[in-house]
Image 1 (spheres, rainbow, N blue to C red):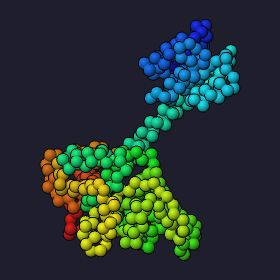
Image 2: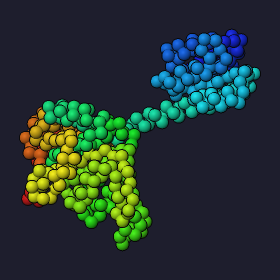
Image 3: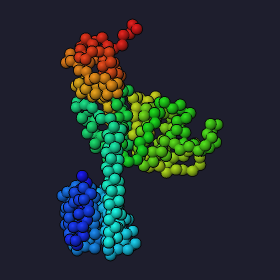
Image 4: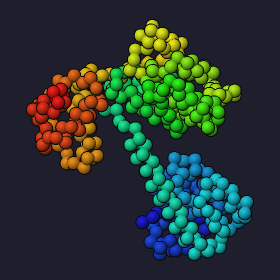
Length: 392
């Protein structure tokens, strides 16, 4: 049952509106002026508010402004007045009112407007809930309670709200991309785009076009103008994964983009200003790559304002039981299988393994065990199935 607050300084009007709305099975509260109405609004959760405009203490427009400035501006407010005109109606709508109804009130129009406003509110609430679910599912949780993982989480919390560039290092499968996503999600740029580029997956002759875009005719296959990842990430975050594999030519242009906040499309002659936060990641030792002449030292110093190292699974084996439970929940849901359990012996055997493939390898092994083993997964099962038989 929807709950409606009626605010009007005339008792006869409040009584009439209450009778009509209660007849339609709505729950109704009354307030004799805007000040009392705002106090009730702060104490109760209302689905809709009907408010007169001309009132003592706090008039309807002032009440509307206070509600819009509060932490709950989604409650639809229908303004009712016998003293208004077109300008008053337009002003009320501009300030956030759902609709404006003149007095004497047309009861049919009132009920239609009330129903439409409540439907809209329900849609707004449902949309927000869906967005929260999408946001929650969009970025997976960083799982673990070990000291190295707590340190990573603390560092993310400190770094994320800034625009500082971050260089994430760590071996394959440790979760560098997940760390980058959380930095973006917790940043002031979270509403902007997160654009990811895997520098190792793009041929060296195409990386510059991928990053900076190109003009039509810049090269044989450039049949139309194309925006690069820097432009697409404007106002958000650009994640350069495996940056250690980027060509020296592209490195020089990335350095210029970081220094001047400008890029030049391939084949173009006009600078384009970009506002982008850079997060880079690599599984290589960049100081070794600098010594070999494969990576620019000046770019390294630009990127590593905040260095962040993601530990190997072998350095945080106390997190394995939590990770197993987490992966099992995911996998049984994906596969439509009943949940299974791991014995203490099975977990102990998994903690003995040298996880060269890190988190990614552990998840694969957990999935394999869930599919191949009985309801209770034992230490013997781990010994049998955890590592592929090299003889096969």
